[in-house]
Length: 449
Image (cartoon, rainbow, N blue to C red; front, side):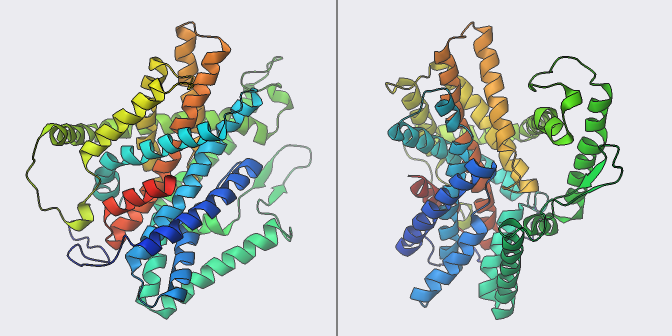
């Protein structure tokens, strides 16, 4: 972290931030973005970050009804609103599996599991913020969080910057409508060089990717590009060249000779990518483990001290107290274990805590590099299920009840992962603007419920 960094609003400035109007508008926008992302995710398998459109809507709506609206109020609105997108992402990639198995959860159970998973993700991000957001400032770009901060600052900086932001959003929206709704051109154009072969060149051409590339810079863009080249131009051709098996190789249901490149990617490359993310996350977790351990030690000291000395902490460094992290996490774990009707035993709960904490760290680092929209949450969910099912198989738990238990646990873990993704971007926006982390964290919990 650069010692010379100064947020847009200094820590000594007294400014309205956590207001009733910001909370109400944030909750309403969160509902809208939650519904929209649930539909989009179930239909096409992906969701979009809500932070940037929520920031724009916040500036427009609050300015329409109130003369004096602070930049930190607009930040609270987008922080709360983005919870809807994260919550939808966590639920839609896991809960449908229970419906497919003929065990549809009730609305009340869905609310319970998703709420507890969301709060767990928010709490797990408290010890991560110091390292991932603050210490790694300048190294992890957090594309959506940075873009959101620039959009909120544009209104304060003058009409020209605000107009530039609006033009950019309008141009991207028009492009998306013309390509996605009216099909004037393909979002993924492709060219075949040799008709007699499967050699094809294609690429994603969307304003969102262009914007993300501009924000994250040439170095990380180059890493992502070469990763794609390695997958599509090296690994997939090698699989085709040497995959001459007469039987389908799991998890595919057809032989490699009958697959096209997209099917090979879906059945094999995606899992290789998920493994790479997991291993990279493990190395990063080892790197930040001393900080996490120190944070937890401080939290336990706060928990058992009758009166701890009140330290003067700058407003921009105030998180939810670490004792609430520990008490809240323990309460959620005990509730999931002891609540009647939830098919989770003690082993499942232990796996939930360990895997959940690990992937919260992984996802917060991953979205810091590639953004929330490109966050491989589905790969982490698959990895969670694989680990859980392998443990159950080793213990001889092969009955259907244990499959239901694994899927139920994966809902909580995936929601925690999704909330960590959105929370980390929001905290980055707040860090750049000079917001109070505690206000953002409380706002996210309100938005969750």
